[in-house]
Length: 281
Length: 289
Image 1 (cartoon, each protein chain N blue to C red):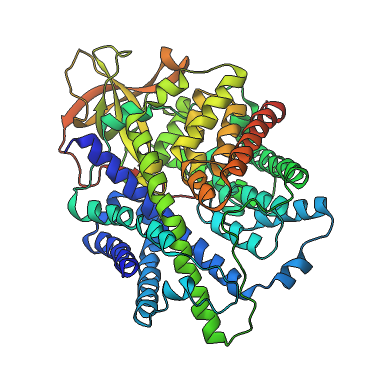
Image 2: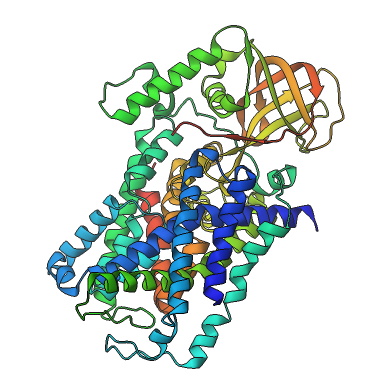
């Protein structure tokens, strides 16, 4: 009976998350069809297990009258040993239904750390192939050229870049890849503040958590923003900044990174969906 | 309740939501193999020559789009059908790494970079070949726990499907608990262990590779997502350490170590861990510059 209840519980987890829309707080919605399909699969297994239970063939047959003649009879202690694990299966069911969904914030930045996709100019594989595209017929490579060049054109067009959440990750990748193309341009984007002791009092990181599949594989993406005067924000304060893209040597990474010289800053409420998602690929 | 504990729970649930569909798929395939594939079919398919069998198994693993959570029960089931250990393990090792989905993700994550993608595939393939060869000489027995006996009696189709379903559910309950425990540990690591303390341990040629392998072990990422995380470490680590991260993680992480321990003898899992660890370290240092 416990098995039926556990399978039902897992089915309920997936149904509950899809019904309430909370699923978007755990995964990139681009992959929601996978967990949606899982609902049906789990229902199917739940019903199958229920039928096995009703007909008395779920554990009994394996324990006593296995008709295959293999004679591997599980004695009762083994059965109880197996059952001792069952409470563990209820743990995720309970936490999904009774605990609130948490949002990743600076606490997780502390733990995970952050890195920027800086491309070393000396590395022949990072930049040279863009300048001299080889005519390989590999589909992905072609598609990638088109994508990144379309992105470059899209984001470097005009003098003001207003970053919406949908294009946040693509744009960040493009800016870190071609910082030169963006120097001097205006940029506007939203994120949460994060300060480290390596930074001066007028410098903060403005970050978003970027999600690939689920929040367990999220990373922090964003830029260093520099204010004209010292400012006092707390970690996890949400703001929209407007400013000019520039570059700066960042000692902890020993690399030059693109930064934003802030001209305007506006405090924001934490958005309903605090994450940004990888959409291509 | 403290906010970090809630964050840990949220990460834990998201790991489960991500892994569960693929584990279900794995146990369903395993149930189908159990009932519909016979020993004779397997015996015919596997080359008599050990080396041929290892190469074939690695290649099939490479074509088989599975993730590291789903492949353990499938591997176990193939062994119950008579696939020898030295062929089953290479299949299990290459399966999650060398497949179109994962390689394309790697290619995109490293921005038009053939180098990382090819090196990832190459190192993974060599590791699994060498592991297969070692196992062929070292172990003469299957090294599994609770020998599974195969149902040979011919039955009606409907009975067969019922049997397959029953095996699927049994399998789900035999690996499910380890996925839950593994997910909990991985979520705790992500929330409470500072990556920076781990990374402070090494920046030398060998030590940085070991650090990245340790990181990929505790993060327990899905192999089709890990390339994006790895690419963000490019500013801190060299390509050799990145490859070590990309090859070791899908072969061994918290979740699948626990799953392997449930299916294979403990001593065997530790030897396999040691072989994979050493081979990934050495090959990533030798091949990648």
